[in-house]
Length: 472
Image (cartoon, rainbow, N blue to C red; front, side, top):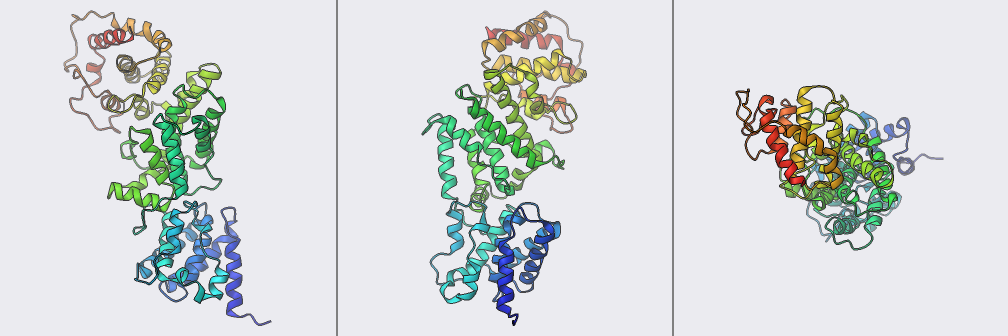
């Protein structure tokens, strides 16, 4: 039997079709590297479409856990094809890659490619598929799936299924649900694929973090909804690993105060067209930070702490230790940025988070925490701040009342022994406490003060007086 070029091409096509996220590297990497090498040799040539669609077909593997060399060579080849093919003029009113952006596939570009056997055999019938503009479009989409936010020129077209799911979730987060809120939250929690891409994993965590406030607001009374959301975040955490991040906390993204807006960001992260829309909104902002696993772990731990606390408060014994993962880091020190984010007067009502933080901070304060005076001072200031500002539930108020009374005992006319002025009358507590506890991580706010000024008994007594009045 004669081994013709067509037969060899057919064997390659069949081999590519067997490559998936579950493939072994020893089997998949040589196929990827061979395909990438052929595309790099002539990225704008007459067979570029074949090698480009070969990489598209293997993108499910490449987006998961490929070998380092296979991942690099595939990305280099796709970017070379994009540069070589560009956006040439053609007679086609539209191209298949554009339909892929609006379809239900999101990042699953490997399910949207052509039937390569048919494409190779019947070139005249598939002009739009082999059109350089379409091949270049698929190269861009696939490169963006493998390395989000590194490719430009992708149309701002979001999958219809994503927009429909976002609309349903936003109706819940805005207080006007289209259907059963519990069913919607459980549906969202079940949206994590077994082998998510970088964008899908990040978008999933951001979306569930955005929806946690409704799940823990007391409006959800079905335990399975909380269980489903907790299970989803735990599954996401298992995929995020524990690799450290070189960025400081201040360099990570700052989710907005609007849960619905954060949910939209979560959905836009999940597809090439959605990421293109995010880029159009934020110009040259470093959007790849939304993919940082360290940042996403922080969101997941914060949401898990609140969800577990709410579940056990409603259906079990209240145990503030469930919040330890949310409010401490691996070294046992306070995760001060997440702790002080419990309440922000300038944004939407976070009183439910303030209650969690106050209970947890009071327990740690009473147990002396890590024993350092600075930590105890920061915990006390946080309790006083929240108690004087947030609308705490009656049972929370009763738990901290004795602590506040003890702090209030210093007479207002007591002389101060420190040389530093008291903190400003209406300080930005979040910025001040972050810097007070971790000055190397957080910039000094305006009118910053030292620990002696913040810990002045006379100053603390005034805060306690205001807090007790607010509780009353």
